[in-house]
Amino acid sequence: MADVSIRNVVKRYGKTGVIHGLDLEIPHNEFLVMVGPSGCGKSTMLRMIAGLEDITAGEIWIGGRLVNNVEPKNRNIAMVFQNYALYPHMSVRRNIGFGLRAARLPKAEVEARVLEAATTLGLEDLLDRKPAELSGGQRQRVSMGRAIVREPSVFLFDEPLSNLDAKLRNQMRTEIKKLHRQVETTIIYVTHDQVEAMTLADRIVVLRDGHIQQVGTPLELFHEPANLFVAGFIGSPAMNFIDGQLESMSTAPAVRIDPTILLPITKPIGADAHDGMSVVVGIRPEDLELATNGEIGPSTYRLRAPISVVEPMGSETIVFLELASIEVIGKARGRNLPALGMAEFDIRLEHLHFFDAATGLSLQGSEGRI
Ligand SMILES: Nc1ncnc2c1ncn2[C@@H]1O[C@H](COP(=O)(O)OP(=O)(O)O)[C@@H](O)[C@H]1O
Ligand SMILES: [Mg+2]
Image (tube, rainbow, N blue to C red; front, side, top):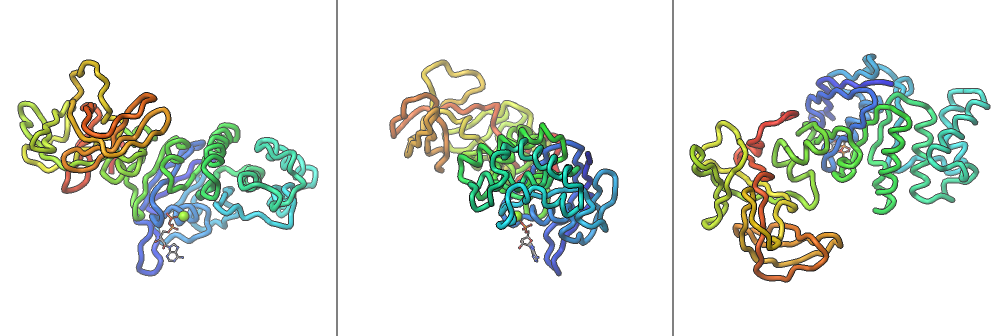
């Protein structure tokens, strides 16, 4: 078991900064996911924790030990990569046991631990096959087996599911989550896929250009994004952003997004929010819903808007509509497809997000903000 402490870690290649003073405390047994667009520094950060990459400045602690100068093999970590990195000429059994044999463990112990790991991963019937005789998902499982068998105190995963098709990715995601419950180790998992981050993580770190944007549980990031970047990155389909100006802040706070649309603000927003201030209103598609004919509740704003495209998903329908002169995405519940053309929509006012247009920062305070 180990906690990981990353203290003011900097990585530069020559003059190019990749990680700019990153601080993060990861408690023992946490499933931490680092998510961000390609090139934001995720692999670099993971490789520095593994010791495969030097750090330019700062400290990395694993299990209470400063590891800046500790060799990768002595850090008690195991890493799983996107491309599996299996030995093609070795059987599954030998691939999984490779690290243990290299460490000269007794043959019987190697055999027992390989069997245990293989059983955990459902590979016990495939032990004599070569990697070429396995599916992508099975290969990734072997690659995880090779990591588990070493009983590391920290698992590092670098986009392990990126090479799998969508269905298998979902299945493996569930398996990795179960695996974490079984093995009880700290996991640091890197991905560019926000769905993977949301579904797997105890806590998510959103990274952009080597800077942390926000740290929080999946639902904190979803419901209380710290800035426009996190708001747009987490959630699918993505949050709609509409420019607006604040009005009547001292009497009946509201935001004007169109000459005909004044949305009441139903929850407190930042102390420096003032009349005339330019803001960006964030509306998640699920909070902009095709109206059913019932009563309009007090925290609902009903408006008419033209539907231009409908995309059935089965249990719900994605609807493209024009709002405040831009195309936005809403949702319709139920089994029937809505018709194109004018329709009524309900905006759920208590779920609106407000950002300072100048800085991109949320106007609603919360924990975990930078
Ligand atoms: N060995 C290297 N030399 C120079 N630049 C590098 C090197 N490795 C990575 N980089 C740069 O560092 C940035 C972060 O890369 P990386 O950590 O691989 O991103 P991610 O895994 O988030 O996609 C990229 O801009 C990449 O070009
Ligand atoms: Mg990467």
